[in-house]
Image 1 (spheres, helix red, strand yellow):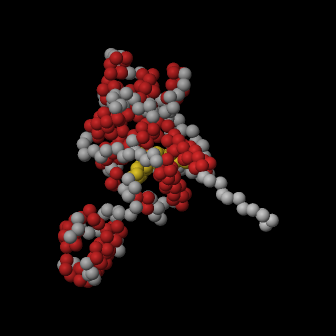
Image 2 (cartoon, rainbow, N blue to C red):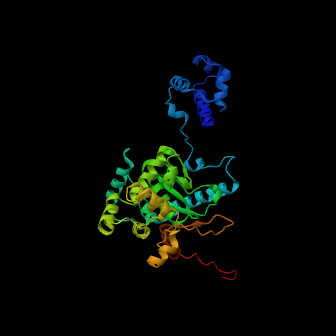
Image 3 (cartoon, rainbow, N blue to C red):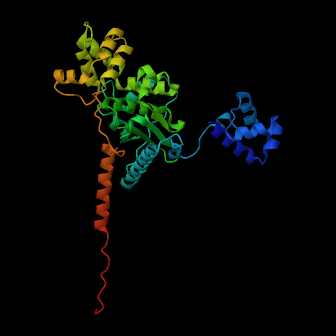
Length: 363
């Protein structure tokens, strides 16, 4: 941040053709101090920053806004591993190809509307109302994100990258993308998709947002910036509407205490992970802390298989498949566009006039 501020400060000073010495004298500061600021080696006090901004006729935010194209702001500094840099380059290439396919097929996605800053619970209600979802479960959160303007790229990333999801908005092309780590359990991928959808609705202008696994865990999200807490509250309400959960508990469970099998039934109904369901039930007062701790320690897959005969696809168990290289898993919409673009290309080739025949030397 200090380096960005220093670069902006130097640029603004040069725009008004002042040397460091003249600039410092005008502000009542030393030229050595201005030099340290511009080199990113000193952080100014807020009072100094206000003085500098006022002299340059700039808003304070000018010194912190990164105006490079969105994809150039992805992690890539010295602290980023070479493997992660390659993986993010692959993500960027997949995004570019996605836009090419939309251009080729004429099927460009429209963005969801921007909302005013409202409570995340209300945002979940308003977005469900806009989409006509009522209080029913979302059976395909990835597909829902895509048809509403948030293109999904699933890619296998290494554990040490500490990335579960990434949101990026290309303002120039008005295109939004989400990267979801396909190595995460299916239930976590559902949660991170809804979380990134919350960023998409509210945080498009905040630059690339990189989320680790902890931001979808209630016990840890409070350690992160407010926008992460906002997105997670939205995701929980968006995936599991309170009125529907209340209806199911009162209609089916009634007065008896929720058992572990009831939790598994509810998680299957709403299409979330067992742990996400447990946290939701505890947070909304349906599950005592002692029961939460007891159930949280249990492995749900074997019991779910025993009771329901199959897993619902959102199991917590992580199947470790090692990939030497990152692998991109195209979404259904991406595959559809690729197939349609290929068909259009074949049709154009078939309709093109054949090249004229050229005669041999004896003709």
